Amino acid sequence: MDSGARKKLLIGSLLAGSAAVTLFVVVFFSLGPLVFGDSTTIPGSTVEDRRFAQKFEQILNFVSRNYVEEVDRQKLFDGAMKGLFDSLGDPYSLYLSQAEMMSLTDTTTGEFGGVGLYVNKIDPSTAEKSTEIRDRYVEVVAPIEDTPAWRAGLLAGDAITRIDGDDVDSLTMDQVLERLRGQPGTDVAVSVLRGTATILEFTLRREVIQVPSVKTTWIGEDIAYLRITQFTAHTTEAFDTAVKEFTTKGYSKLIVDLRNNPGGLLEAVAKVGGRFFKDGVIVSTRSRVADESSVFEAQGDQTIPDSVKIIVLVDKGSASAAEILSGALKDRKRAWLLGETTYGKGSVQQVIPFDKTGFKLTMARYYTPSGVNIDKVGIVPHQTLLEKELTDAELGEYRKLLDAKTFQNFALQNPAAGPKEVDGFVQGLKTRGVSLDPRWLARLTRLELDRTNNRPSPVIDLEFDVVLQEAVKLLRGPDLAIP
Image (cartoon, rainbow, N blue to C red; front, side, top):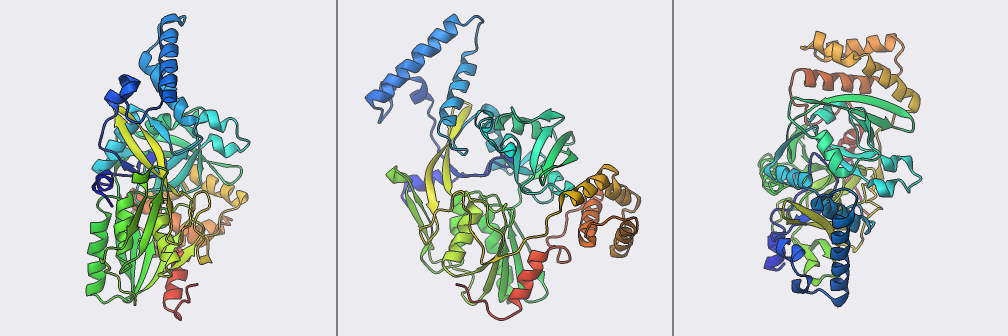
């Protein structure tokens, strides 16, 4: 990689908290003088570019002078920029307002005030042309672990229909971000569509969200478990520390959990991917701009021996950088993928700031080692296994329990409840005619107890997590023949 490309990869990040899932890099220059100056000074501009720039200037001047009321030129410019990027028809290429650029700055510092959601929102002008009702809503890509949204039970695939009582149909991504984020300690109410018809109501108390990266634990004495929640500037260091511990304790089996990992830094995932291989391609990017095409290869920094058996857990919340790692491990027959087909985000964006705003533009697409781009397709695991989804009738029953504050009241009255008390509570619910799975009821109760006692949830829940149960079973069985 040339030095220019390296510079552009240094502070790339995922827009966290309430942001669209994306993999991008941030460019270190400002376009201010070029954008606002004479178009003839812009390097590479064509005669046609200059003609359109002159047209825009003429229309801007005419509207600002002749509209029936005095207009704000900044507002006109923001609207024009928004329309420019909307015309690309690419949900990942966006004009970034001052608030969104501030959100990006918050994320690179590692913490912000919010509810802990990665979300995606189609622009209202595009959504209104769609026949799919969910296109009008805010898609929950993934909740961040140990945050208000995660503890409340929001799930990947949920659709937020209202925020603080207001419909989200006409809200832009910028407005969604402003509504969901805010001062820690304040509340925000969200209405969520789950399934085809069930609306769930949640009141989330904003917190300082510290973006996590790597969590580890052991399953028995033989299986190391490592969850990557997203790829940040600190992920490689945390990953290396975890692997050193695993090596010291003599691990021979590894579970890499990428579920609900919405992506992050391209450079971070390329480095982590290199820890699994001696050499060879991890990912490549291709662009019509020559400098944006790169091949990322293992650099001889392998720390996970070929002898270690690996299972990777993925789901529909695994996106972007998470798909790069899982795709490399699958393509190169290094790991067995278990779970469900991933999100399907196969493009790379650059964030280019100017003044207090900026824009995010798709500059390249990424390809797995076998040369496949998974955009809008995702990565299909070797073995599909999904947690059973609730029916509409079961969702209705769940809603009644939430409305009655069933779990919250139990946790408040029994803050020191242990497994025995939780089991007794669940049995009581079953006796009252609640038909939901006892495992699920116990899980919700434990999460509410954690929230009430302000304690982090355990890294894993083997009793509830059927996908993790299957991974343990596979690792302790015969060697997997990876196709």
